[in-house]
Every structure is written in C-alpha cells, then in structure tokens.
Length: 244
Image 1 (spheres, rainbow, N blue to C red):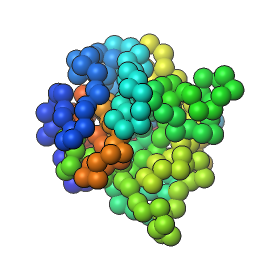
Image 2 (image 1 turned 180 degrees about the vertical axis):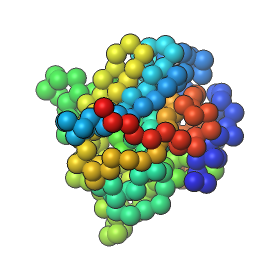
Image 3 (image 1 turned 90 degrees about the vertical axis):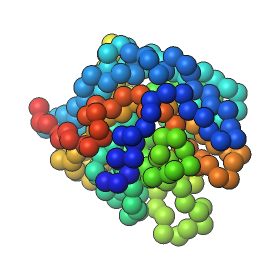
Image 4 (image 1 turned 45 degrees about the horizontal axis):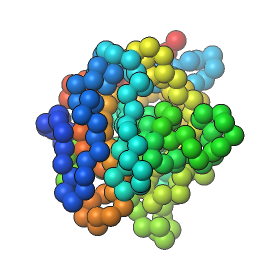
C-alpha cells in the first residue's frame, strides 16, 4: 500500500508541472462540488450489480475543466475510487499498482470510442460528459500528486487490456458503465460479472485533477497533480461493500 500513503502528504493547492503549463481551474481547490462527504459501494443482490456512489457538499459533476484546445496539457477532472482489487479482476494482465475506478470529464478529447455518452450519434465528441475508466495507478515522483496512470511499451506481449480499452499505451479501460449525476451524488453502475464477480473488496474515494502530457519525456502521459478531497482522510481504503 506504499503508493496510497504518498498521496496523503500532498499539499492541496495549485500545482506546477515542470515544463508544462497547468490548466487546472482556480475554482477547483475550494469547490464544494469536489468536497466529499461520503462514499459507498452497494451490491444489488437482485440485479447483481455494484453501485459506486460519491456524495459531495455541493453539486456533483457540475464542475468540469475548461477546454484548452489540444491534447498536450489537456485537463482531466476525476471522482475516483481507489480499491484493493487485482488488475486481473477488471480485465488487465497481472501488474502491480492501485486498481481505481475513475469517473472523469475532459473536454479536449474523447477516449470512449465505443460509447456515445451524449446520444447525438457522434462517438468522438463527448469527453466532457462524465464517464468511467478502470485504471492502474502507480507511484510517480515526477508529478506533484505522486501518482500516474501506469504505462507500458506498445509491443510488450505480456500486457493484456480489455477489448474496450481506448488504444492508449496505459493500463486504462473505457468500460462504458452508466454514470449518473444528481444533486449531491455521482454514481456509476457496474455489472458484477464485469469485475470477476468480486463482491467484497476495500475502497476509498478522492477527487483529483489530472493532466495529459505528450511533449515531455520526463513526465507521465497522464499524471495526478492535485487532490482536493479524500473520503477517509488518509486514503487507507477503510470502506467495504454493503448489500441491499
């Protein structure tokens, strides 16, 4: 769990990425829309689905990044559930790191080519609409948040990704689960069979700012730069799944 505790010591504030402009909105730091009040994962035993929920002080999902017009430096906002699941539980090959379910918004690009979240019959224009990703997070001291999405060499034959992955050289999947924002809550519904039928695991919840890098060799492709709120206060993954 070494990776988790690195995040706990972060100073919450505006971050600077060496060699790249930070496109983090100033309002995010103090926004009640990103201040977590509670988190839950409910196992619907009748429908065999898991319902992940984050409740915030303000209005969940209302705050979104501003478009910057390019991939390099593209801002990503996330409501994230770090877990102690195994990478193989969500369709990746065996690899170290933190398996996290990230609900994200990023207006500069669309990384869900199979899904049309805004239902306009165009599949590559809705990155700003809240949508889920499975990701593997790893320790990364090159970024101020101390974590990044784990990358790999494209030609590595040992790497396995789910067929719904967006084609990036990272442990990332675009599973297409429905995300619902209503009032103070943001939810995502995950069929149990899409998680290796794992009914019990530990989790936490955070809100965070991430940013894409395509120009600097000494920075990750997608790094965490600010953490705004942590459900547990220390990212110790204290929460467990409940049944309805």
